Length: 62
Image (cartoon, rainbow, N blue to C red):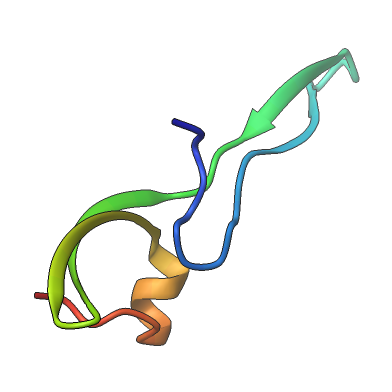
C-alpha cells in the first residue's frame, strides 16, 4: 500500500537536506497522514487522509 492520501492523492516529495556547511544529501518529505473512519456512500470505511483534507472538510467523519 503506497503512502498516499486517499482523497487528494498527495504523496512523498523529494528534496535535499542542506547542513550549515552546505553538505547536500537527499531526503524525503512525507505527507501528514491519519487513518480516519469516514462515511462514504452511506458506508463507513477506514481511509488514510492527510491533515490538509481533514482541515478543509473534504471528508465527513463517521
